[in-house]
Structure formats: C-alpha cells, structure tokens
Image (cartoon, rainbow, N blue to C red):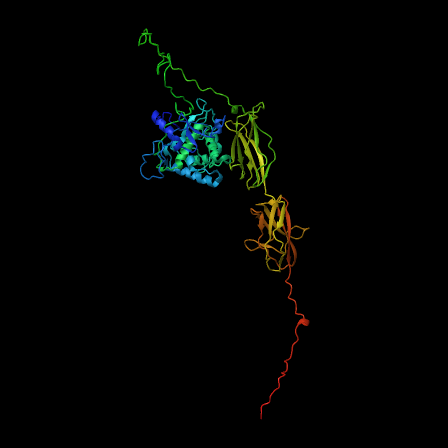
Length: 600
C-alpha cells in the first residue's frame, strides 16, 4: 500500500514563553527581508501569492507541507562527529544521497540554464518542507524512495479539487490526484516537468535525483533569475501558492546557506508540524481549538450538555432532576464529498484560435504564438482550463526558457496562448500538440517548420587579385562576409563551386580546384558555414596545368550569390638585357708616366 504522510504526527508542545522568544528572534535568524508581526507570523514586503491562482497552477496542487522552522542558531559547516548542541530537533543535517541529488541538480541547471542561478540550498529548503528530505533520507543508492511518498488526495474535502490525471499510475488513485514523491509533484505537473536525473532512462517522481532535477527545471522556467529576490519569490509561490509556504521555504533557504552537514541515509528526523494539522499555520483542512472564557450555556469540552447558571444567592448550581439514560445512537455515515463539475469536465474539444503560418529561420523566434481555445460540445468557450502544449518530433525547437512542454490556463474567452517558440538549428517540420490536462479529449496539432539561416548579400573582405601559375597554389585564401538586411548573418550555409562560366554554372572539369581530406581534387564544397561574425574563409585553392580565367561561385540560402575571378597564367619571362644600355668594353689606358731605362 502506498505510504501516506502520517497525519498523526506529534505536534511539539510550545509554551507561550518559548513562542515569544521565537517571535522576537525571527527577524534576526530567518530569511532576508523577513520579519515577524505581533502574532508571530512572518511578513515579507512584496511577497504575496497570486490571487485566484488555481491549485493546478502549482507544482504541488497547493498540497499540505511541513511548517517547522529551522533552529535559531545556524549550524556549523560540515561537522564530522556528533551533533552540535545548538542544532535543534527540526534540523539534523541532510541525508547523503538526498544532498548529492540537490547538488547534481544545481550543477546540471548551471549548465543548461545558467541565467537561472539556482542554488542547491533552495532545493533542500523545498525538500525539507515537502517531505522532510525524503522522510529523513529513506532512499536506496539509486535515489529511489523506500516506499512511495504520497500526500492526501485532492478531493476538495479540505484541500484543492483536482480529479485524476494519471489513471493512478503515480499516486495509486484513479479518482483524484495526490502529490507524489520527495518533492511532491502532482501528476499533471510531473507529466511535463518530469526529468531523468540519474540517467536510468526514465523520469520517476519517487526518485530523488529525478525529483530534484525536475524541481530545478520547474523553478527556472519563465526565464526567472533566482538571484533576484522578486523572481525567487515568484518561483517559490509557483510551487505552492501560499504566503506562509514562501516564508517557511525562505527561512530554510537562509538556514542552509549558512551551512549544513551530510548525514547517513535514513538517519534524518521528520518535522512534526504540518500545514493541515489543526491549529498549525494556515489551515488547509482543519481548524484549531479555541481557548478562553466560555459563554453561559456553551457546552463544556467533551460534553453535549449546556452549563446551567448558578441560582441567585448561591454558590452552586440548582440541582437537576434525574434523567433517563438515552439509548445509544448509531454514528451517521460520513457522506462522500460532493462531486462538483469543474470547467475541465465540460470541455468537449479544442479549436485552433487563429494560429497560422508557423515558420521561422533556424535560431530565430517564431513570430506567431500558438493559441488554442477550449470549447464545450455546443461550441461555448471554457475558461480556467489547463492546456498542455508539447513539442514533438525530431527537432531542437523549444519554448522560451528551453522547455519542450508548457502548461497554460485558458482565459475568460477560453483561449490559452503558449509561450513563444524558438527555432533550433535542425531544419524541417515538427509538431506542437495541445491537450487538455485532466480530461481525455482529442489533441490539437500545429505544424511548424524551421528553415535554413539566410543571407541576402555576400562580399569579399579583400580586393587582392587571385592569381596562380599552372600546377601551383593560390597565395591568398578567399574570405567572404554574409549579411542579412545589413547585419552579419551567422551560421549561414554556403556552397562554393568552380563553374564553367557565368552562362554555364555547371561544375568545371578543369582549372582551379580544392582538395578534400584525402588530397583528391574537388571543385564543389558544401557544408560550409559562416561564423558568429558572418565570415567564412575557404580552403586553399590549387591550379592544374590549364591556363586562363576561371570563376568561383558562392551561393547561400536566401539568394545571395558572389562570383570570384581566378586567373591562371604562366609566369612572365624575365626581360632580356637591352644592348644599347650595356657599357662598352674598354682597353687598358696607356700609362702617361715616362718610363725610365735602367742605367748601363
């Protein structure tokens, strides 16, 4: 049988004096910008739940959570033996496998969504209030919980009303949904937010690695930067739309940021306060007992008889006549919760709300957003219905934020508009499917197409003449720049072909050529792409023994064309010396000095 949260958890006995001390210390020990009001409730400026938000808008369906706050003294970082005396029973470290899952999720999100700035301590804070760190770290070496962690059924009886969306696959309940796993996802949210965090080929909400990574992706959606307080608040409130939940998570976040330590799996302690316990925090399903003066005639605790006022002038009540014992009464059966029809129950089909022409260039954002309208059988629009948009097919296109699934609630006109689609680098067609969350009706498919990146102009970056002698190689490599509407066109595919002539663009069979990796002659190159600045430098060109003037033609998607002239000619012979400019040969100049004969 699925393991449910124990509703009989002990509630800590807190005296008025201790409560006053806690209230006084909250502002100094809890999260930034958190203070306590006169009743001990934490208050934070500009941190309010979304008014009227549906429970299906949250990761947990606004399910109950643990309300214990961290101890007032921050833990010492990484103690090795024992537990410091300053650490209270509400916090005794984080189980090893659970802590590893949080840290690995942070590392993956830093790589996949660096602008989110997700700290692992936020996952630890949420894991603490959702499941007490997987019930004190009761997980195996692969991160699977030892028994499923399942919250109360969301049947509208003290909780939100969310009818079954997974046929009981995750929560074992085919009538209503329950939050499941150590991070307490409702099945309808897990259907699009679930991730495989331990690389075992499946995403399982009852695996702490999968659940932690999924929670990280969930918190990082919508382009939120969690280093910004306002975005951090929005992300936490989207997990559970409650002011007290926000305060509790922020308190644990700050606590873990100041330091914590690793403990063996299964040795953690469970919190004792729950938001659905009577008299604990914002009641999700119960109410607290009331103490104080009792009005005359009010029943005494545990009694069905009213109190009788004392007779005038006496200090004791008037005697009551004996009463006959009443026959035992049979307890009345508890009626089943009423089955209230939700807007989702009335949806008969989905209609395209005007989306046409879904085409974008690789790397660009689609100009039009996908929109679907939920309608009854009579064609009336249905608001407040959750629509899931899923990117299908072999494509790297995603919605804004990098997700391939988005859930959107229909507005008063019954229309849900998906986030903007962003084209990837893979070209071709793919499908986006819209479905109704929580109801089985035919999906609505939208066809989208990603086309190649384009350039409308190509130009050489230099103007040096490109010449070569027969059998030699050209000294300069051809470099060009591609632009589109005057801006550099990056990652544009370029084809280079040595053609016969302007009038005959077929590949030439003589003259200049390129070499492939094996050194063989090729006269057409494909798969070339411009860099981030729109530049492309072609490989070296070589010449055979044919002389003459040749053409290299470059083309791109989008119609840009450039012809580059290449010239192969014999080297000019060195000029013969001009005889008229040569100096005449001269005979030796006779000596003018008198010769002297030797004396006889």
